[in-house]
Length: 105
Image 1 (cartoon, rainbow, N blue to C red):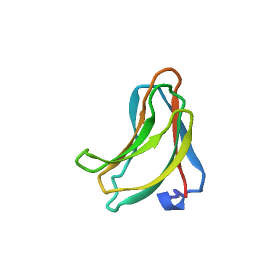
Image 2: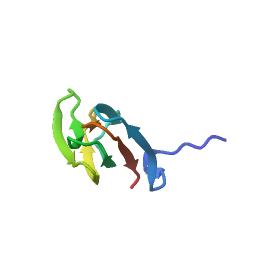
Image 3: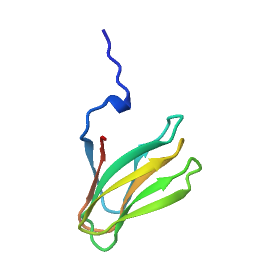
Image 4: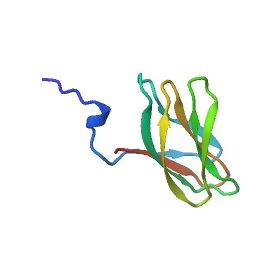
């Protein structure tokens, strides 16, 4: 027997923590659903010289919102990703690294 679980049936908690090198921007989440999706991302910036950011993009690839993650801090950001949109995490700066994790509700 095969069990199928939807995203809303998942347990709460951190799904995975991802390391990101300074100076890199990575795709953190992509919404291929028919409806807008509410997500929470926990981001940490340990790169010096520049604040990192969580970026919300619409289906056309335009950044519609930026959430600053100051050097040496961790912030939790909850946002609604539009249908066809996505979220990037930009780990800005030099020397060190960043992490992000998608959190369950």
